[in-house]
Length: 75
Image 1 (cartoon, one colour):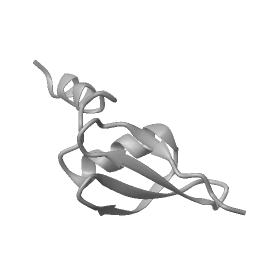
Image 2: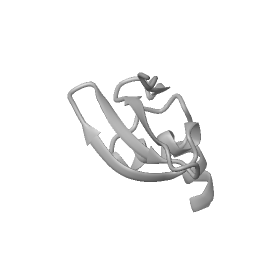
Image 3: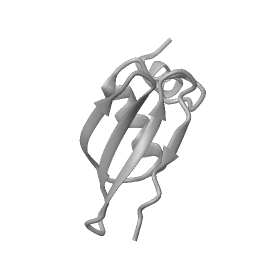
Image 4: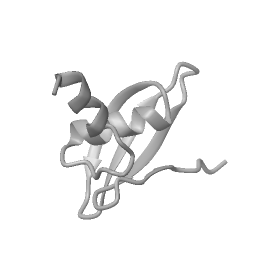
């Protein structure tokens, strides 16, 4: 098995992230941009992503399910 195959499987949306780096990759699949920060709590990772437009978006990645959800910004 080649390394590229392993990488593809690690990015599968059904696989829960085990590290901040894996959570960052999952967040970038949902929202393209540069990862600024990854925080973790007991249940999730919160990833802050800087988009090309200059907007910062927070994305939550569930530690158990691997589900990625974009936080809605309040106006």
